[in-house]
Amino acid sequence: MKQQQQHATPRRFDVLAIFTSTSLVAALGVPWHGITHGYHPGLWVLLGLMLAWNGLSITAGYHRLWSHKAYSASLLPRLMFALGGALAVQNSIRNWCADHRNHHRHTDDPDLDPYSSRRGLWYSHMGWMLRDYPATTKDYSNITDLDRDPVVAWQHKHYLTLAFSLNILLPLALGWLFNDPMGGLLLLGFFRLVIGHHTTFLINSLAHAWGSQPYSDQNSSRDNPLIALLTYGEGYHNFHHTFQWDYRNGVRWYHFDPTKWLIKALSWCHLAHHLKQVAPEKIEQSRAKMQLAYASAQVLQSRPSNKEQWLNLLEAEYEQLVHSLNAWALCRQRKLELKTAKLKQRWDETELHHQLQELELNLNRQRRHWRLLTQQFA
Ligand SMILES: [Zn+2]
Ligand SMILES: [Zn+2]
View 1 (tube, rainbow, N blue to C red):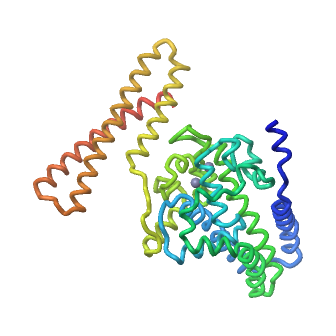
View 2: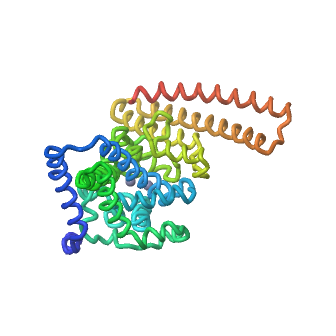
View 3: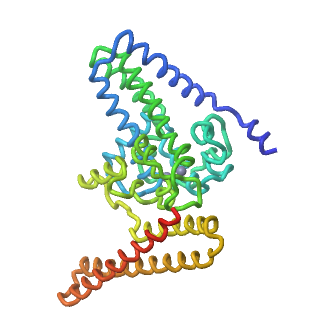
Protein backbone atom coordinates (compact mmCIF):
# COMPACT_ATOMS: atom_id res chain seq x y z
CA MET A 1 0.00 0.00 0.00
CA LYS A 2 2.81 2.34 1.02
CA GLN A 3 4.69 1.40 -2.14
CA GLN A 4 1.64 2.27 -4.26
CA GLN A 5 1.32 5.64 -2.57
CA GLN A 6 4.97 6.39 -3.35
CA HIS A 7 4.45 5.62 -7.05
CA ALA A 8 1.33 7.78 -7.10
CA THR A 9 3.35 10.73 -5.80
CA PRO A 10 3.36 13.40 -8.52
CA ARG A 11 6.61 14.07 -10.35
CA ARG A 12 8.22 17.51 -10.03
CA PHE A 13 8.70 18.24 -13.75
CA ASP A 14 10.10 21.71 -13.03
CA VAL A 15 12.92 20.26 -10.89
CA LEU A 16 13.48 17.43 -13.37
CA ALA A 17 13.77 19.96 -16.21
CA ILE A 18 16.33 22.07 -14.30
CA PHE A 19 18.53 19.07 -13.40
CA THR A 20 18.34 17.52 -16.88
CA SER A 21 18.95 20.70 -18.87
CA THR A 22 21.81 21.98 -16.69
CA SER A 23 23.53 18.55 -16.65
CA LEU A 24 23.25 18.20 -20.45
CA VAL A 25 24.62 21.68 -21.11
CA ALA A 26 27.45 21.13 -18.59
CA ALA A 27 28.37 17.76 -20.11
CA LEU A 28 28.09 18.70 -23.80
CA GLY A 29 28.07 22.51 -24.20
CA VAL A 30 31.00 23.27 -21.88
CA PRO A 31 33.54 20.95 -23.62
CA TRP A 32 32.20 21.91 -27.06
CA HIS A 33 32.80 25.62 -26.40
CA GLY A 34 36.23 24.78 -24.92
CA ILE A 35 37.26 22.92 -28.07
CA THR A 36 35.88 25.45 -30.55
CA HIS A 37 36.64 28.74 -28.73
CA GLY A 38 38.67 27.99 -25.59
CA TYR A 39 38.15 29.70 -22.22
CA HIS A 40 40.00 32.81 -21.05
CA PRO A 41 42.19 32.12 -17.92
CA GLY A 42 40.23 34.87 -16.14
CA LEU A 43 37.07 32.79 -16.49
CA TRP A 44 38.75 29.84 -14.74
CA VAL A 45 39.71 32.14 -11.82
CA LEU A 46 36.13 33.40 -11.64
CA LEU A 47 34.89 29.80 -11.74
CA GLY A 48 36.93 29.00 -8.59
CA LEU A 49 35.61 32.11 -6.83
CA MET A 50 32.00 31.46 -7.79
CA LEU A 51 32.23 27.80 -6.78
CA ALA A 52 33.47 28.88 -3.35
CA TRP A 53 30.74 31.53 -3.02
CA ASN A 54 28.11 29.00 -4.12
CA GLY A 55 29.37 26.22 -1.79
CA LEU A 56 30.22 28.24 1.30
CA SER A 57 26.90 30.10 1.18
CA ILE A 58 25.19 26.75 1.61
CA THR A 59 27.57 25.32 4.24
CA ALA A 60 28.31 28.43 6.32
CA GLY A 61 24.99 30.20 5.62
CA TYR A 62 22.06 27.89 4.93
CA HIS A 63 23.48 25.08 7.05
CA ARG A 64 25.51 26.21 10.04
CA LEU A 65 24.06 29.75 10.44
CA TRP A 66 20.36 29.48 9.61
CA SER A 67 19.56 25.78 10.09
CA HIS A 68 21.61 25.19 13.23
CA LYS A 69 22.27 28.66 14.67
CA ALA A 70 25.84 27.56 15.37
CA TYR A 71 26.79 31.26 15.39
CA SER A 72 25.23 34.62 14.58
CA ALA A 73 26.30 36.86 11.70
CA SER A 74 26.13 40.52 10.72
CA LEU A 75 24.12 41.83 7.78
CA LEU A 76 26.94 41.70 5.22
CA PRO A 77 27.71 37.95 5.46
CA ARG A 78 23.99 37.17 5.72
CA LEU A 79 23.36 39.07 2.49
CA MET A 80 26.27 37.35 0.75
CA PHE A 81 25.05 33.92 1.89
CA ALA A 82 21.46 34.67 0.81
CA LEU A 83 22.68 35.72 -2.66
CA GLY A 84 25.09 32.77 -2.84
CA GLY A 85 22.26 30.41 -1.89
CA ALA A 86 20.11 31.73 -4.75
CA LEU A 87 23.15 31.34 -7.00
CA ALA A 88 23.40 27.69 -5.86
CA VAL A 89 19.74 27.07 -6.85
CA GLN A 90 19.02 24.98 -3.78
CA ASN A 91 15.71 26.63 -2.96
CA SER A 92 15.20 29.54 -0.56
CA ILE A 93 16.71 29.63 2.94
CA ARG A 94 13.24 28.99 4.43
CA ASN A 95 12.59 25.86 2.36
CA TRP A 96 16.12 24.51 2.78
CA CYS A 97 16.18 24.98 6.56
CA ALA A 98 12.67 23.51 7.05
CA ASP A 99 13.83 20.34 5.27
CA HIS A 100 17.18 20.25 7.02
CA ARG A 101 15.76 20.63 10.52
CA ASN A 102 13.41 17.72 9.73
CA HIS A 103 16.42 15.74 8.51
CA HIS A 104 18.06 16.14 11.94
CA ARG A 105 14.88 15.62 13.89
CA HIS A 106 13.92 12.42 12.07
CA THR A 107 17.27 11.21 10.70
CA ASP A 108 16.87 8.01 8.62
CA ASP A 109 13.10 7.77 9.14
CA PRO A 110 11.88 6.77 5.65
CA ASP A 111 8.65 8.75 6.00
CA LEU A 112 9.71 11.84 7.97
CA ASP A 113 13.35 12.50 7.01
CA PRO A 114 13.14 14.39 3.66
CA TYR A 115 16.34 12.74 2.39
CA SER A 116 16.34 9.53 4.41
CA SER A 117 19.33 7.32 3.60
CA ARG A 118 17.17 4.26 4.28
CA ARG A 119 15.48 4.87 0.94
CA GLY A 120 18.76 4.34 -0.87
CA LEU A 121 21.71 6.33 -2.21
CA TRP A 122 19.92 7.75 -5.26
CA TYR A 123 16.93 8.88 -3.23
CA SER A 124 19.07 10.68 -0.64
CA HIS A 125 21.26 12.24 -3.38
CA MET A 126 18.61 13.59 -5.78
CA GLY A 127 15.57 11.33 -5.92
CA TRP A 128 13.85 13.05 -3.00
CA MET A 129 13.54 16.28 -5.01
CA LEU A 130 12.03 14.71 -8.13
CA ARG A 131 8.62 13.94 -6.64
CA ASP A 132 6.34 15.55 -4.05
CA TYR A 133 6.96 13.19 -1.13
CA PRO A 134 5.05 13.71 2.14
CA ALA A 135 8.31 14.38 4.02
CA THR A 136 9.15 17.27 1.69
CA THR A 137 5.73 18.91 1.85
CA LYS A 138 6.48 22.35 3.16
CA ASP A 139 5.68 22.86 6.80
CA TYR A 140 7.33 25.97 8.18
CA SER A 141 6.42 25.41 11.83
CA ASN A 142 10.02 24.44 12.64
CA ILE A 143 11.58 27.65 11.30
CA THR A 144 9.45 30.39 12.87
CA ASP A 145 12.64 31.84 14.43
CA LEU A 146 13.98 32.55 10.93
CA ASP A 147 11.01 34.81 10.14
CA ARG A 148 12.63 37.45 12.34
CA ASP A 149 15.54 37.75 9.90
CA PRO A 150 14.57 40.25 7.17
CA VAL A 151 17.27 38.83 4.85
CA VAL A 152 15.56 35.41 4.96
CA ALA A 153 12.12 36.91 4.16
CA TRP A 154 13.55 39.10 1.36
CA GLN A 155 15.39 36.20 -0.25
CA HIS A 156 12.30 33.95 -0.08
CA LYS A 157 10.14 36.63 -1.75
CA HIS A 158 12.57 37.36 -4.58
CA TYR A 159 14.11 33.91 -4.89
CA LEU A 160 13.27 33.28 -8.57
CA THR A 161 14.41 36.73 -9.72
CA LEU A 162 17.66 36.38 -7.76
CA ALA A 163 18.31 32.84 -9.02
CA PHE A 164 17.74 33.90 -12.66
CA SER A 165 19.87 37.06 -12.38
CA LEU A 166 22.77 35.33 -10.63
CA ASN A 167 22.79 32.22 -12.83
CA ILE A 168 22.14 33.75 -16.26
CA LEU A 169 22.70 37.52 -16.26
CA LEU A 170 25.77 37.63 -13.97
CA PRO A 171 27.69 34.88 -15.87
CA LEU A 172 26.83 36.57 -19.21
CA ALA A 173 28.09 39.92 -17.86
CA LEU A 174 31.29 38.39 -16.43
CA GLY A 175 31.91 36.54 -19.70
CA TRP A 176 31.39 39.83 -21.60
CA LEU A 177 34.34 41.30 -19.61
CA PHE A 178 36.52 38.74 -21.44
CA ASN A 179 34.69 39.16 -24.78
CA ASP A 180 33.08 35.76 -24.32
CA PRO A 181 29.54 36.02 -22.85
CA MET A 182 28.68 32.49 -24.01
CA GLY A 183 31.84 31.11 -22.36
CA GLY A 184 30.89 32.94 -19.15
CA LEU A 185 27.38 31.52 -19.22
CA LEU A 186 28.57 27.97 -19.87
CA LEU A 187 31.44 27.89 -17.37
CA LEU A 188 30.22 30.22 -14.59
CA GLY A 189 26.52 29.48 -15.08
CA PHE A 190 25.91 25.88 -16.02
CA PHE A 191 29.18 24.12 -15.14
CA ARG A 192 29.51 25.82 -11.74
CA LEU A 193 25.86 25.09 -10.93
CA VAL A 194 26.07 21.36 -11.67
CA ILE A 195 29.32 20.95 -9.68
CA GLY A 196 27.79 22.95 -6.81
CA HIS A 197 24.64 20.81 -6.82
CA HIS A 198 26.39 17.46 -6.65
CA THR A 199 28.96 18.47 -4.02
CA THR A 200 26.12 19.52 -1.70
CA PHE A 201 24.03 16.44 -2.51
CA LEU A 202 26.98 14.21 -1.52
CA ILE A 203 26.42 15.29 2.08
CA ASN A 204 22.93 13.78 2.07
CA SER A 205 23.92 10.64 0.20
CA LEU A 206 27.54 9.46 0.61
CA ALA A 207 28.07 11.11 4.02
CA HIS A 208 25.30 8.82 5.29
CA ALA A 209 26.78 5.69 3.70
CA TRP A 210 30.60 5.74 3.53
CA GLY A 211 32.96 6.41 6.41
CA SER A 212 33.46 5.87 10.11
CA GLN A 213 31.25 6.52 13.14
CA PRO A 214 33.60 7.80 15.86
CA TYR A 215 30.96 9.68 17.88
CA SER A 216 27.64 7.86 17.55
CA ASP A 217 25.94 4.95 15.84
CA GLN A 218 22.44 6.19 16.60
CA ASN A 219 21.98 7.14 12.92
CA SER A 220 23.64 6.47 9.56
CA SER A 221 25.82 9.61 9.45
CA ARG A 222 29.52 9.07 8.74
CA ASP A 223 32.82 10.93 9.08
CA ASN A 224 34.80 10.85 5.85
CA PRO A 225 37.80 13.15 5.18
CA LEU A 226 37.56 12.50 1.41
CA ILE A 227 33.97 13.76 1.30
CA ALA A 228 35.08 16.73 3.45
CA LEU A 229 37.52 17.69 0.65
CA LEU A 230 34.63 17.99 -1.81
CA THR A 231 32.07 19.56 0.52
CA TYR A 232 33.87 22.47 2.24
CA GLY A 233 34.32 20.40 5.40
CA GLU A 234 30.84 18.93 5.71
CA GLY A 235 32.16 15.37 5.33
CA TYR A 236 32.66 15.12 9.09
CA HIS A 237 29.00 14.33 9.22
CA ASN A 238 28.98 11.89 12.16
CA PHE A 239 30.42 14.63 14.38
CA HIS A 240 27.86 17.06 12.97
CA HIS A 241 24.86 14.81 13.64
CA THR A 242 26.12 14.17 17.19
CA PHE A 243 26.84 17.84 17.99
CA GLN A 244 24.73 19.70 15.46
CA TRP A 245 25.00 23.20 16.93
CA ASP A 246 28.83 23.26 16.97
CA TYR A 247 30.11 25.73 14.35
CA ARG A 248 32.77 23.18 13.37
CA ASN A 249 32.25 19.90 11.54
CA GLY A 250 35.93 18.97 11.39
CA VAL A 251 36.67 19.34 15.08
CA ARG A 252 40.46 18.81 15.03
CA TRP A 253 42.67 21.69 13.87
CA TYR A 254 43.99 19.59 10.97
CA HIS A 255 40.55 18.52 9.71
CA PHE A 256 39.84 20.09 6.31
CA ASP A 257 36.88 22.35 7.10
CA PRO A 258 37.03 25.63 5.11
CA THR A 259 33.54 26.51 6.40
CA LYS A 260 34.87 26.49 9.97
CA TRP A 261 37.85 28.62 8.90
CA LEU A 262 35.57 31.12 7.12
CA ILE A 263 33.34 31.47 10.20
CA LYS A 264 36.40 31.94 12.43
CA ALA A 265 37.83 34.54 10.02
CA LEU A 266 34.48 36.38 10.00
CA SER A 267 34.55 36.46 13.80
CA TRP A 268 38.03 38.06 13.73
CA CYS A 269 36.52 40.76 11.50
CA HIS A 270 33.60 41.15 13.97
CA LEU A 271 31.18 39.93 11.29
CA ALA A 272 30.33 36.67 13.12
CA HIS A 273 29.59 36.29 16.82
CA HIS A 274 28.72 33.74 19.51
CA LEU A 275 30.50 30.82 17.82
CA LYS A 276 29.22 27.71 19.60
CA GLN A 277 31.53 24.85 20.54
CA VAL A 278 30.81 21.62 22.37
CA ALA A 279 32.95 21.15 25.51
CA PRO A 280 36.02 19.01 24.68
CA GLU A 281 35.28 16.52 27.48
CA LYS A 282 31.84 15.79 25.96
CA ILE A 283 33.43 15.09 22.57
CA GLU A 284 36.09 12.84 24.13
CA GLN A 285 33.48 10.96 26.15
CA SER A 286 31.42 10.29 23.01
CA ARG A 287 34.49 8.91 21.26
CA ALA A 288 35.35 6.71 24.24
CA LYS A 289 31.78 5.42 24.42
CA MET A 290 31.94 4.35 20.78
CA GLN A 291 35.37 2.76 21.35
CA LEU A 292 33.87 0.86 24.28
CA ALA A 293 31.03 -0.39 22.07
CA TYR A 294 33.41 -1.49 19.28
CA ALA A 295 35.83 -3.17 21.73
CA SER A 296 32.97 -4.97 23.55
CA ALA A 297 31.66 -6.30 20.24
CA GLN A 298 35.18 -7.53 19.37
CA VAL A 299 35.54 -9.26 22.77
CA LEU A 300 32.32 -11.21 22.16
CA GLN A 301 33.70 -12.36 18.81
CA SER A 302 37.36 -13.01 19.56
CA ARG A 303 37.56 -13.87 23.29
CA PRO A 304 34.42 -15.89 24.02
CA SER A 305 36.12 -18.04 26.69
CA ASN A 306 36.97 -15.19 29.11
CA LYS A 307 34.64 -12.50 27.80
CA GLU A 308 33.27 -11.56 31.26
CA GLN A 309 36.74 -10.64 32.48
CA TRP A 310 37.52 -8.49 29.41
CA LEU A 311 34.12 -6.77 29.41
CA ASN A 312 34.48 -5.90 33.10
CA LEU A 313 37.97 -4.53 32.49
CA LEU A 314 36.78 -2.40 29.56
CA GLU A 315 33.83 -1.08 31.55
CA ALA A 316 36.03 -0.25 34.58
CA GLU A 317 38.65 1.57 32.45
CA TYR A 318 35.91 3.49 30.61
CA GLU A 319 34.32 4.58 33.91
CA GLN A 320 37.72 5.66 35.21
CA LEU A 321 38.40 7.67 32.05
CA VAL A 322 35.03 9.44 32.27
CA HIS A 323 35.63 10.16 35.95
CA SER A 324 39.08 11.67 35.24
CA LEU A 325 37.67 13.69 32.33
CA ASN A 326 34.85 15.15 34.41
CA ALA A 327 37.16 16.00 37.32
CA TRP A 328 39.57 17.76 34.95
CA ALA A 329 36.72 19.62 33.18
CA LEU A 330 35.24 20.80 36.47
CA CYS A 331 38.58 22.11 37.70
CA ARG A 332 39.29 23.86 34.40
CA GLN A 333 35.82 25.43 34.53
CA ARG A 334 36.48 26.75 38.05
CA LYS A 335 39.76 28.28 36.93
CA LEU A 336 38.04 29.97 33.97
CA GLU A 337 35.26 31.31 36.19
CA LEU A 338 37.77 32.76 38.64
CA LYS A 339 39.66 34.38 35.81
CA THR A 340 36.59 35.95 34.20
CA ALA A 341 35.13 37.06 37.55
CA LYS A 342 38.52 38.54 38.50
CA LEU A 343 38.02 37.04 41.94
CA LYS A 344 41.28 35.17 41.92
CA GLN A 345 43.71 35.46 44.76
CA ARG A 346 47.31 34.51 44.43
CA TRP A 347 46.98 31.64 46.91
CA ASP A 348 43.78 30.26 45.43
CA GLU A 349 45.02 30.52 41.89
CA THR A 350 48.23 28.67 42.70
CA GLU A 351 46.41 25.89 44.48
CA LEU A 352 43.92 25.53 41.64
CA HIS A 353 46.70 25.62 39.10
CA HIS A 354 48.50 22.73 40.85
CA GLN A 355 45.26 20.81 41.14
CA LEU A 356 44.60 21.23 37.43
CA GLN A 357 48.12 20.06 36.56
CA GLU A 358 47.67 16.96 38.71
CA LEU A 359 44.31 16.18 37.12
CA GLU A 360 45.81 16.63 33.67
CA LEU A 361 48.60 14.17 34.48
CA ASN A 362 46.08 11.70 35.79
CA LEU A 363 43.85 12.15 32.74
CA ASN A 364 46.76 11.60 30.34
CA ARG A 365 47.73 8.43 32.21
CA GLN A 366 44.15 7.19 31.96
CA ARG A 367 44.03 8.08 28.24
CA ARG A 368 47.17 5.98 27.67
CA HIS A 369 45.63 2.99 29.50
CA TRP A 370 42.46 3.35 27.46
CA ARG A 371 44.33 3.60 24.17
CA LEU A 372 46.45 0.52 24.89
CA LEU A 373 43.42 -1.47 25.96
CA THR A 374 41.11 -0.55 23.07
CA GLN A 375 43.88 -0.85 20.46
CA GLN A 376 43.95 -4.58 21.17
CA PHE A 377 40.42 -4.78 19.79
CA ALA A 378 40.76 -2.27 16.95
ZN1 LIG B 1 22.93 19.79 9.72
ZN1 LIG C 1 22.77 14.23 7.57
